[in-house]
Image 1: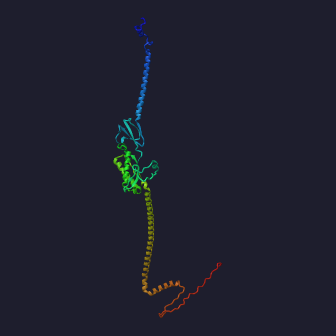
Image 2: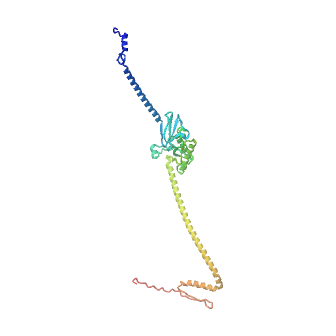
Image 3: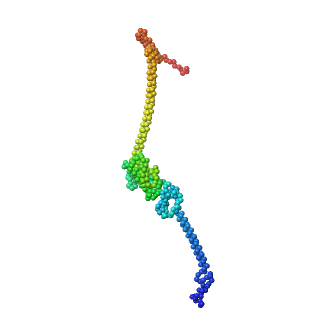
Length: 378
């Protein structure tokens, strides 16, 4: 009652105060309700934002599993490292696909529609990039550098340089990707093996010049045998293995001399064969002409003799009946042929007494009478 702050009277006064009136211990109830409402709205907004973010996360999660397989590819989906599906169903065709995020599922792309190239240079001499691009040979050093210059041994014990370029396509993506740690490196080793294998079965002359096509086919056959035996899952078609061969750089000129001599010899042989064919054909033609002429003459002679024989046989009875008449006729015929061109004609008939005439002739030629020349004016 005397203003003691510890007396209960003031607290009763506080407790009996009207609602909404300010007190010394805290804000009025309306303020507290406003704060609670604001907090509730803030929490509600936060929950909405969280829901939106969760929806975005779910959408991102779903969309992160979408992947595209290109037209020249197939894809293999892996679930915990193992292909999903059986057989052909393991290969995903070009288009849109979906997978669970890594590391649950992963995708391996295999370019089956592309051509792949592997080159074997184990038997080729060392070249810089500029020399390889221009096809220029390196300078001759007089020796082969161990571990730098490659070469192969031929069946006749010679040394040559050889390289092979393989173009292939993937036929079995499952085998190509999962059965081998690195199929490309394995193919290169197999190509090296096929190159050395074929070199040991050909002579240097055949591998370099005479039979390069057979050498190439031997390399491809050996490589195809390895591919089928190992089930590598690739396809090697005819003509997809290209071979380059070259003699050692230090003896290139000697090889060139041999080639030039061989070419000259081939040229001479061809010229000789051409001349021989020409001479033979000419001789055969001339012989045919002679044979045909002889046959014609023979036929004419046989025909003429046959005609004369037939004529003689027909005249023989007439001659036998009157030989003198036949003789006189022949004499007149021959005399007519003789006297036709004779300038002086003397006829001595037979004497009745059978003796011979004695005729003395002065055979002096009459002088020629000069012919009168006609003048040009005439």
